[in-house]
Image 1 (cartoon, helix red, strand yellow):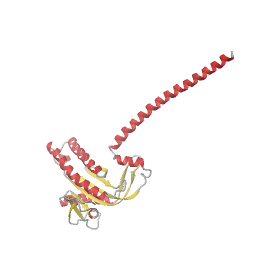
Image 2 (tube, helix red, strand yellow):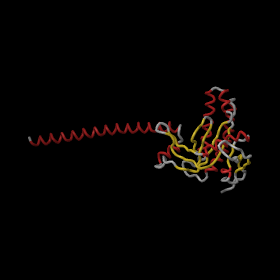
Image 3 (spheres, helix red, strand yellow):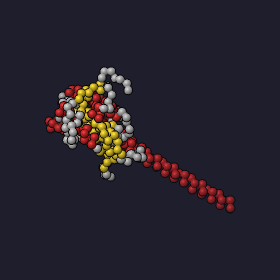
Image 4 (tube, helix red, strand yellow):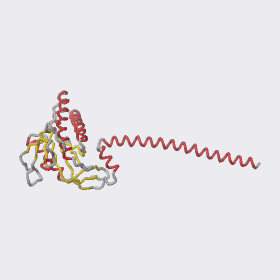
Length: 264
């Protein structure tokens, strides 16, 4: 009788043990499904979020412990704006205008990213791109000007596609300047972004506006010119007063590159 008692106890213990194991396996399967679903949801969120914030910014903010700490940085600012786009908006169907604009943005974003530029904002039909804002880049000035030259080339190719569809061709102005800016996450809990604040942003925009006065497409300031090597063909423009400055700004038209590229 006593032996039977111990056998029953042992069977009960084994039953409880098996029950716990089965329950745990079921819980593990549920957790695995939950993790897979969560990972898929995070991937979709990252893809969607990446449409509004550049991928390199997302990686910088998630990988760096000090990414949210504001700091002063020397940054090269490129501001590009389409000429006569407001008139185009009033003459064409909104869906067509938006399609042309989005195609333009896609082309320019690829070029700027290729040359280590970070597209910070799309302001109407304008593009604000920074070089050296997320990390130190000793070649940021050359990168920015090379990006502008390739943007010119890519715009010509994009215009051929627009012309083939009987759409009006685009032209742009680009202003490039360099200087110290305050970089960090700007905004509040409801809306925030990684951006910069400082006078160089305004100067780059003013220089871009001068492209219309000088009838050129790419203008750089004397600060940019001073850091370029002899690969670039430049033409000095007349010093011009701009809003917010007490003295005229010296600018240079970037014609292109020399046929012989010297190493440096």
